Length: 236
Image 1 (cartoon, one colour):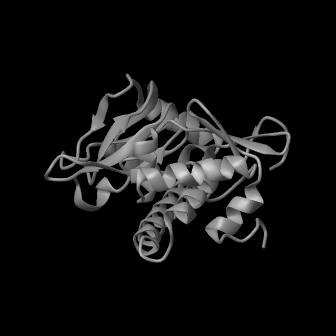
Image 2 (image 1 turned 180 degrees about the vertical axis):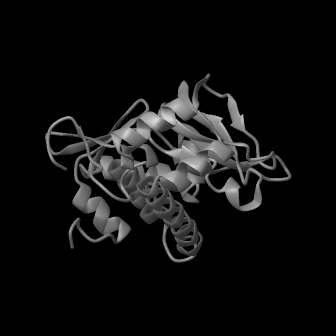
């Protein structure tokens, strides 16, 4: 947290792929790809289809989902400005999940072959990309392990802190987070029931840890959420 009205992130794992690139590499990627616009609710890509493109989000939010055989939808990830999606398709050549626009989305759309060529020719960008993919694999493994060793409230606190680090806006010692998911989707995301999620949020509001409004959560006491999530303070 370094000032009023600024993104929380910094450098490293708290930033999306786009923010990790130099201005020169950003300009090259813009020239390589094309801008695509998606309305709220639009299907950006579908699980199982060929992974012919990667997407870098310029504005808006998307949710990465899996659908069970009986039609139930589970939220696997939430991606926002600067995040790359479709990166795991390079392993199998096919989409590993479906991606839906949560609100109005503007994305840089880049053919997979051209993106691979860009990475091969630009070592710094390639290093950041490989680092990000490694982090996402690690996060996926950690998520699976945490479902059996943590409570819903712990996972919710951890998710809010992660969103604050990646996309939060700091002002007057508080961190403002846009929250595009419904409570039902948020509960699915952190692997808990809606009633557990509601109790946690209500309790944190009463204790002054957070404030909530339409599509927005403000963290007013990040240290308390870190204790709930069993996280160490920054720099520890």
